[in-house]
Length: 242
Image (spheres, rainbow, N blue to C red):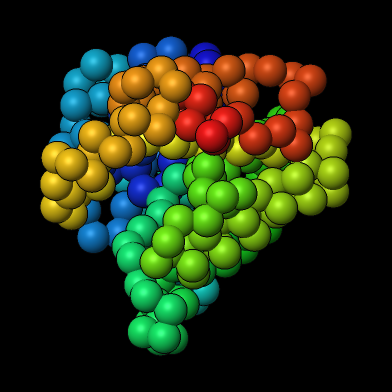
Protein backbone atom coordinates (compact mmCIF):
# COMPACT_ATOMS: atom_id res chain seq x y z
CA UNK A 1 0.00 0.00 0.00
CA UNK A 2 3.03 2.31 0.09
CA UNK A 3 2.48 5.52 -1.91
CA UNK A 4 -1.15 4.64 -2.67
CA UNK A 5 -3.92 7.15 -2.04
CA UNK A 6 -7.28 5.63 -1.15
CA UNK A 7 -10.65 7.39 -1.03
CA UNK A 8 -13.22 5.67 1.19
CA UNK A 9 -16.73 7.11 1.08
CA UNK A 10 -18.66 7.00 4.33
CA UNK A 11 -15.43 6.35 6.23
CA UNK A 12 -16.06 8.27 9.45
CA UNK A 13 -17.73 5.41 11.29
CA UNK A 14 -18.28 1.66 11.54
CA UNK A 15 -16.88 -0.53 8.73
CA UNK A 16 -15.58 2.42 6.72
CA UNK A 17 -13.56 3.74 9.66
CA UNK A 18 -12.12 0.30 10.39
CA UNK A 19 -11.05 -0.09 6.76
CA UNK A 20 -9.43 3.36 6.88
CA UNK A 21 -7.37 2.32 9.93
CA UNK A 22 -6.43 -1.02 8.37
CA UNK A 23 -5.29 0.41 5.03
CA UNK A 24 -3.48 3.30 6.72
CA UNK A 25 -1.62 0.76 8.88
CA UNK A 26 -0.48 -0.92 5.65
CA UNK A 27 1.05 2.34 4.44
CA UNK A 28 -1.63 4.07 2.35
CA UNK A 29 -2.66 7.71 2.39
CA UNK A 30 -6.35 7.90 3.27
CA UNK A 31 -9.07 10.30 2.15
CA UNK A 32 -11.98 10.04 4.58
CA UNK A 33 -15.27 11.09 3.00
CA UNK A 34 -18.23 11.96 5.23
CA UNK A 35 -21.57 13.71 5.00
CA UNK A 36 -23.00 14.42 8.46
CA UNK A 37 -20.31 12.77 10.61
CA UNK A 38 -17.83 15.63 10.36
CA UNK A 39 -16.65 15.46 13.99
CA UNK A 40 -16.05 11.73 13.86
CA UNK A 41 -14.21 12.05 10.54
CA UNK A 42 -11.99 14.73 12.01
CA UNK A 43 -11.21 12.64 15.07
CA UNK A 44 -10.28 9.66 12.90
CA UNK A 45 -8.06 11.83 10.71
CA UNK A 46 -6.33 13.22 13.81
CA UNK A 47 -5.78 9.67 15.08
CA UNK A 48 -4.20 8.50 11.82
CA UNK A 49 -2.15 11.65 11.30
CA UNK A 50 -0.76 11.25 14.81
CA UNK A 51 0.59 7.86 13.69
CA UNK A 52 1.93 9.15 10.34
CA UNK A 53 1.75 12.93 9.87
CA UNK A 54 -0.01 14.39 6.81
CA UNK A 55 -1.28 11.04 5.54
CA UNK A 56 -5.03 11.46 6.09
CA UNK A 57 -7.48 14.14 4.94
CA UNK A 58 -11.23 14.66 5.24
CA UNK A 59 -13.63 15.64 2.46
CA UNK A 60 -17.36 16.24 2.76
CA UNK A 61 -20.46 15.95 0.61
CA UNK A 62 -23.76 14.13 0.08
CA UNK A 63 -23.14 11.03 -2.05
CA UNK A 64 -26.87 10.65 -2.67
CA UNK A 65 -27.10 14.14 -4.21
CA UNK A 66 -25.99 14.20 -7.84
CA UNK A 67 -25.14 17.89 -7.59
CA UNK A 68 -22.50 17.17 -4.90
CA UNK A 69 -20.59 14.45 -6.71
CA UNK A 70 -18.39 16.54 -8.96
CA UNK A 71 -17.29 18.60 -5.95
CA UNK A 72 -16.57 15.45 -3.93
CA UNK A 73 -14.42 14.19 -6.79
CA UNK A 74 -12.55 17.49 -7.00
CA UNK A 75 -11.92 17.51 -3.24
CA UNK A 76 -10.50 13.98 -3.52
CA UNK A 77 -8.35 14.98 -6.49
CA UNK A 78 -6.84 17.91 -4.60
CA UNK A 79 -6.25 16.06 -1.32
CA UNK A 80 -2.96 14.36 -2.30
CA UNK A 81 -2.68 15.12 -6.02
CA UNK A 82 -3.35 11.52 -7.02
CA UNK A 83 -5.90 8.77 -6.51
CA UNK A 84 -5.18 5.05 -6.76
CA UNK A 85 -8.21 3.41 -5.14
CA UNK A 86 -11.89 4.36 -4.80
CA UNK A 87 -13.90 2.41 -2.25
CA UNK A 88 -17.63 3.10 -2.67
CA UNK A 89 -18.63 2.31 0.90
CA UNK A 90 -21.19 5.02 1.81
CA UNK A 91 -24.67 3.55 2.05
CA UNK A 92 -28.11 4.36 3.39
CA UNK A 93 -30.02 1.37 4.81
CA UNK A 94 -33.46 1.32 6.37
CA UNK A 95 -36.74 -0.62 5.91
CA UNK A 96 -39.69 0.66 3.96
CA UNK A 97 -42.84 -1.35 3.25
CA UNK A 98 -43.91 -1.39 -0.39
CA UNK A 99 -46.68 1.19 -0.70
CA UNK A 100 -44.97 3.61 1.67
CA UNK A 101 -42.00 4.52 -0.54
CA UNK A 102 -41.65 8.09 -1.79
CA UNK A 103 -39.16 10.10 -3.82
CA UNK A 104 -37.15 10.97 -0.72
CA UNK A 105 -36.64 7.23 -0.09
CA UNK A 106 -35.68 6.75 -3.73
CA UNK A 107 -33.14 9.57 -3.58
CA UNK A 108 -31.68 8.34 -0.30
CA UNK A 109 -31.52 4.60 -0.99
CA UNK A 110 -30.90 4.55 -4.74
CA UNK A 111 -28.86 7.74 -4.58
CA UNK A 112 -26.35 6.42 -2.03
CA UNK A 113 -26.23 2.79 -3.13
CA UNK A 114 -26.22 3.07 -6.92
CA UNK A 115 -26.40 6.54 -8.43
CA UNK A 116 -23.67 8.04 -6.24
CA UNK A 117 -21.11 5.25 -6.72
CA UNK A 118 -21.75 5.22 -10.48
CA UNK A 119 -21.25 8.94 -11.08
CA UNK A 120 -18.42 9.32 -8.57
CA UNK A 121 -16.59 6.51 -10.35
CA UNK A 122 -17.19 8.29 -13.66
CA UNK A 123 -15.90 11.62 -12.32
CA UNK A 124 -12.72 9.92 -11.05
CA UNK A 125 -12.14 7.65 -14.05
CA UNK A 126 -9.25 9.64 -15.54
CA UNK A 127 -7.50 9.95 -12.18
CA UNK A 128 -7.71 6.20 -11.56
CA UNK A 129 -6.53 5.38 -15.09
CA UNK A 130 -3.21 7.15 -14.55
CA UNK A 131 -1.75 4.37 -12.41
CA UNK A 132 -3.72 1.14 -12.91
CA UNK A 133 -6.33 2.17 -10.36
CA UNK A 134 -8.88 0.12 -8.47
CA UNK A 135 -12.58 0.56 -7.70
CA UNK A 136 -14.14 -1.53 -4.94
CA UNK A 137 -17.90 -1.41 -4.43
CA UNK A 138 -19.37 -2.32 -1.06
CA UNK A 139 -22.38 -4.46 -1.97
CA UNK A 140 -24.57 -6.79 0.11
CA UNK A 141 -25.50 -10.46 -0.08
CA UNK A 142 -29.09 -9.20 -0.40
CA UNK A 143 -28.28 -7.91 -3.87
CA UNK A 144 -28.95 -11.53 -4.90
CA UNK A 145 -31.42 -12.63 -2.24
CA UNK A 146 -33.93 -9.91 -1.31
CA UNK A 147 -34.56 -8.78 2.24
CA UNK A 148 -38.21 -8.23 3.15
CA UNK A 149 -39.30 -4.59 3.45
CA UNK A 150 -36.05 -3.40 1.82
CA UNK A 151 -37.05 -3.50 -1.87
CA UNK A 152 -35.48 -0.18 -2.88
CA UNK A 153 -32.24 -0.96 -1.05
CA UNK A 154 -31.98 -4.43 -2.59
CA UNK A 155 -32.79 -3.07 -6.05
CA UNK A 156 -30.03 -0.47 -5.72
CA UNK A 157 -27.48 -3.02 -4.51
CA UNK A 158 -28.41 -5.38 -7.35
CA UNK A 159 -27.80 -2.55 -9.80
CA UNK A 160 -24.47 -1.80 -8.14
CA UNK A 161 -23.47 -5.45 -8.49
CA UNK A 162 -24.15 -5.30 -12.24
CA UNK A 163 -22.30 -1.99 -12.36
CA UNK A 164 -19.28 -3.73 -10.81
CA UNK A 165 -19.19 -6.36 -13.55
CA UNK A 166 -20.01 -3.94 -16.38
CA UNK A 167 -17.32 -1.45 -15.39
CA UNK A 168 -14.78 -4.24 -14.92
CA UNK A 169 -15.32 -5.11 -18.57
CA UNK A 170 -15.47 -1.53 -19.79
CA UNK A 171 -12.49 -0.13 -17.86
CA UNK A 172 -10.04 -3.04 -18.26
CA UNK A 173 -7.10 -3.14 -18.42
CA UNK A 174 -6.56 0.35 -16.96
CA UNK A 175 -8.85 0.05 -13.92
CA UNK A 176 -9.84 -3.08 -12.02
CA UNK A 177 -13.35 -3.14 -10.52
CA UNK A 178 -14.48 -5.59 -7.83
CA UNK A 179 -17.06 -5.83 -5.07
CA UNK A 180 -17.41 -6.97 -1.48
CA UNK A 181 -20.77 -8.43 -0.40
CA UNK A 182 -20.95 -8.49 3.41
CA UNK A 183 -23.40 -10.61 5.31
CA UNK A 184 -24.02 -10.12 9.04
CA UNK A 185 -20.93 -8.12 10.00
CA UNK A 186 -22.14 -5.53 12.49
CA UNK A 187 -25.60 -5.25 14.02
CA UNK A 188 -27.55 -2.25 12.68
CA UNK A 189 -27.65 0.80 14.89
CA UNK A 190 -31.44 0.77 15.10
CA UNK A 191 -32.88 -1.46 17.81
CA UNK A 192 -32.86 -5.19 17.15
CA UNK A 193 -34.11 -7.62 19.77
CA UNK A 194 -32.08 -10.61 20.88
CA UNK A 195 -34.50 -13.11 19.36
CA UNK A 196 -34.03 -11.57 15.91
CA UNK A 197 -30.25 -11.63 16.37
CA UNK A 198 -30.33 -15.30 17.32
CA UNK A 199 -32.51 -16.12 14.31
CA UNK A 200 -29.96 -14.43 12.03
CA UNK A 201 -27.03 -16.23 13.63
CA UNK A 202 -28.84 -19.56 13.25
CA UNK A 203 -28.78 -19.04 9.45
CA UNK A 204 -24.99 -18.60 9.35
CA UNK A 205 -22.96 -21.82 8.93
CA UNK A 206 -20.05 -20.24 10.82
CA UNK A 207 -22.55 -19.57 13.68
CA UNK A 208 -21.21 -16.11 14.54
CA UNK A 209 -21.24 -12.48 13.50
CA UNK A 210 -18.46 -11.36 11.18
CA UNK A 211 -16.16 -8.46 11.97
CA UNK A 212 -15.10 -5.27 10.24
CA UNK A 213 -11.61 -6.77 10.07
CA UNK A 214 -12.96 -9.49 7.75
CA UNK A 215 -14.07 -6.78 5.34
CA UNK A 216 -10.83 -4.82 5.63
CA UNK A 217 -8.73 -7.89 4.86
CA UNK A 218 -10.85 -8.66 1.78
CA UNK A 219 -10.46 -5.09 0.53
CA UNK A 220 -6.71 -5.25 1.07
CA UNK A 221 -6.57 -8.45 -1.00
CA UNK A 222 -8.55 -6.95 -3.89
CA UNK A 223 -6.35 -3.85 -3.99
CA UNK A 224 -3.24 -6.01 -4.25
CA UNK A 225 -4.56 -8.71 -6.64
CA UNK A 226 -3.51 -7.50 -10.13
CA UNK A 227 -5.28 -10.28 -12.07
CA UNK A 228 -8.66 -10.06 -10.28
CA UNK A 229 -11.44 -7.95 -11.77
CA UNK A 230 -15.21 -8.23 -12.11
CA UNK A 231 -15.48 -10.37 -8.98
CA UNK A 232 -17.77 -10.03 -5.97
CA UNK A 233 -16.53 -11.63 -2.74
CA UNK A 234 -19.23 -12.67 -0.28
CA UNK A 235 -17.95 -12.16 3.26
CA UNK A 236 -20.84 -13.74 5.11
CA UNK A 237 -19.77 -16.84 7.04
CA UNK A 238 -21.58 -18.97 4.45
CA UNK A 239 -24.99 -17.34 4.97
CA UNK A 240 -25.65 -16.94 1.23
CA UNK A 241 -25.40 -20.73 0.85
CA UNK A 242 -28.76 -21.17 2.57
